[in-house]
Image (tube, rainbow, N blue to C red; front, side):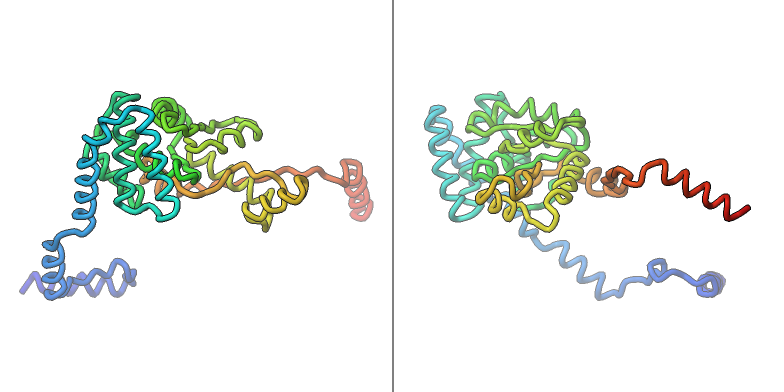
Length: 296
């Protein structure tokens, strides 16, 4: 009885102080708890689909292992041509992943494990892949990055700083170049023309801040024009529209997503410009003198 009285007294104090709605926690209904337990015991469709995809990739490993370098590139081009017309279907993506894995084994000396195959599949589907330390996040990203970039889409691998962007671009460059893909890396302090050359590459490693500021610069330069409209105007006349810094925003793979999308997102990124003062210094001195005369 004393516990009930204490609970009621505490509840009366909370109501008197004005409890925020989000702090007014109410116990879940027994039926809701029962449903939650039942749902938790059901098989997860995503887990089943990812496991099935990994098995598809593994089933192709022996076949692509017997191909020489030229045949590996040629069959990759055939798969990419089908993806360009049919989309990133799982059956086609599995064939591409198997070839990227074999190329990585040859040029980097690293073979993608099943956990990396599943992570690459999740990234290809626009999902967040959580991996433990040591499971190879950097290598896992090359599967989806290489597959999408081979179709002609612009791929940005977004890191938290310039050091990681440079390190990952350098370590993974041989794999991309095996399939004829160019690799760019944008660093702080790069001039505009160099940034445009780096962003023109098939796969670009860049920090989240550099990518955001370059996007803002493009929006200021293009105004209400989209990137496609700017290209159409330049086809008619090279001087009708400015050249944007970015090639396009088709796919982004975000490394350390919790840091970039949560921690770093709390800091506003503002771009500003100092415009010349057309009035000049003399007019302000004259205004001050006139104001003094009025006061006196």
